[in-house]
Image (cartoon, rainbow, N blue to C red; front, top):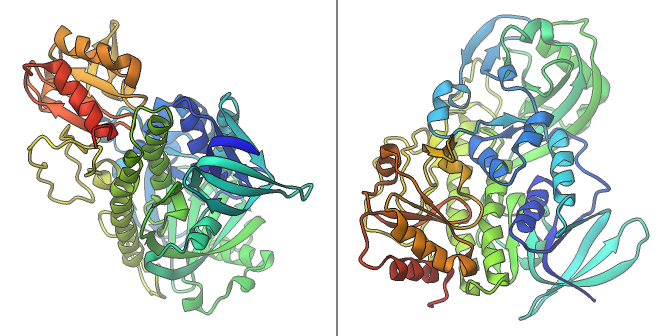
Length: 528
């Protein structure tokens, strides 16, 4: 029987990212996907700046941007009665504004899922430690004290074989077989509203080129739908929500009827339209009660489903596996206790619950849940969710409190106050590195990083532990760094491999070696 440290079930963007992150962390993995290849439908498109930071830190950013849409094509959100008709409203979302650069040097990206997945697959396959099998289904599993035996079915040859994994990542989507067989309860609402995605070829540049937008919301008495920008030229998506409220069923959306509705929304009766695909789906807003089940971990849509209003589903899933991968690597390498793995649920489940709740509020404000006449302009928070993107703050065994108060935040959805308080994302600060301008984002997110303004004494302490924990140490002298990280001249901050602060000494220590060693053993659980 083949043995593998980590088996990843599901080869969508979250499963592919998990393979890539585990390889970067030095862990062998096997990913299995029942489909023959990557996505053939655009599905999700928006990659927020926090997720792009993760891709930046593991060397994937450039390839993803090359596959996606140039930033200048997506600067607006537009509401109109028809695409060719009267405009109702337009907004410049926070994500497209220049001031977003103060929070992160890495910008968001629009890349349709069927363009993104081939990039992630190529990058994952380039890693020696990650193996990918498509047309392969995980049909059953049996979990024991020492591992999980999973039966795999080759859908081409119909041959079955068993593999033993020390850990299993369930990235098998909203209808997760693993989640169902585990009997996991979902908290929230199922079947919130029904929708259909239409993929089409049509030249819409006459009505879009002068107002480049990621989304064009169409609202009139005959139809409400959304044009989704894919290549900003001739390939688009068209989304219709609340089908049953309008008397439709998914069966009504033949290619012919779909083309008629696209022409109606465009306001161009003779528009040349070619329908490429029609995909019905139903939105839900619920989160798994528990993410960790022995040696099995739920991630992505297997762990949480949320309305796409705001574009958080895929992003939340990528951030799930970023949180989980380093913990699995630490345990498998023997530098952390298995108790560390429980912090995956402790940290990520509350975040998904909050994001799912806000995504549902977005959808409700836009009339997605029922038939609504007239303009249903989204609430002001929509696509201005700076706090939701960057503001997660973890509480778990893997975070050591320093007694400081959390920053005051007027609106946790829209507002983000950078802070190096333990549990939060390590703030972005520019500094000089090897004679060049760099960001703290460039030196965190891969292994533990000790950032200090205290000079040699902290660097020596980190170097003593580097062989065991792979800590890198950086002395940063800029005043902006000390201010943003809340430390004085002798202070130091320990950033975890997922870019979140695990420990902070706000001032000089009498024994930096002992303090840092204690911080590492506390975070990794070796002293428990």
